Picture (cartoon, rainbow, N blue to C red):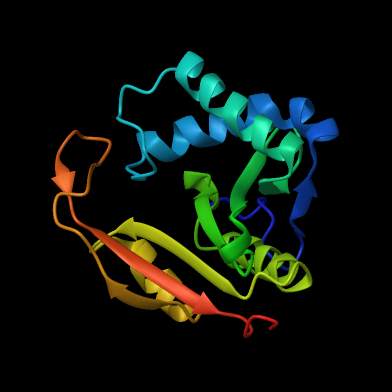
Length: 185
């Protein structure tokens, strides 16, 4: 670990809107590439290219623009150390829920509280938006499971051979949820 890198005590995550997104895009692409290179099972294989990562971030930008997705970044524009997304359910019967997606921390900045700070910012915003039920899936048996459990998420099961990790081998997932508040009636 590089002692010059900030920790969650010195680094507050920032929610990024569509008007700021392009200034963060190159750093977000590098963050995604770094995460996948270091084994993060976040929907991409190890041969992920910059062009593919950019295409993915086109989708993220579209979600920011239509209000279905929120994005937080920890770090500077040129060097984001972490990011997380919240996908807001758009169905009228599911306006109390949202999905936590792509919690990423640059490999050189892990174990410094950045993921926890990002998740806390996301949860605070979810409460403000009355999204009281958060859910996510992660690779079963991965270190991410310990992290989510320590953050108060509960595992409700998973599916075998759900998705390929970056190495192309199929693995089970684990589905987690956290109740922040009861839905308004």
